[in-house]
Length: 342
Image (spheres, rainbow, N blue to C red):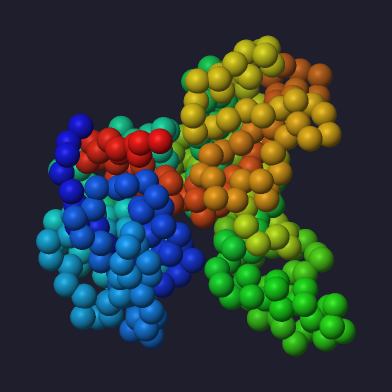
């Protein structure tokens, strides 16, 4: 534990992720000496509330990267352009873009799964996985500690917030337009087809074998974290604004009684089992808003063998992603947050 305060910067601050991260830093009493915000020039006309003040967003082209301790990198284009330069300034960088997730020399980290792979003296850059992998990896780790996982089949239901403001605006405008008898095609830019009152089995560009780029990336990230694990992903957009959910089938090497698997979740604060097997005995997507906890429900045997289990997993996609980044910073710098007095 240390009592040091840090100079923290957020690159890509004028985004939904950036504003949410500022709020989380404030809410958690992260030990900040100075908070700096930066983004593209065209996104620097606003300030973001932090504590009792407002912090203006600085133009990244003129931003001074010196004397920063921790940099949260949130924007893909800015990450590609500035992260390598920031590394040379001896900054510890946590990047949530896809730019470095498969790089062999950059650790891909999920809190509670493989934090031990970070060496602060050796690694000035760590990457965090996509929202889907960040949600499922802690659950798989809990189960893997009990039995070898042979294969996983995952079907995800992704809210439009994963596509950013443009995707959220498109869902809003299409929904409003339908009630106003406006042609949906007038409000179609981000999604290939109508998203309002619909579901689209298509996230990312299609590859030659029929898999999409997002599905392929998730499979690649899972194998980087867990090794040679059989993994198949199906991604779909659904017309909700916030949250991430998935049905998961897991094939195990060993016959594990279902109750023993349930017991594995008792002592884990990051993954919570809520499974009462009645009409309201599970967690739905909108119930996770504002909460980085991963909830597991509908845990049951898949088929007639104890080797296979099925479950529903749900979380707030933004809060879970950012919570992972924050916890990596806390663990790497041995920071213990002070709890507010009641």
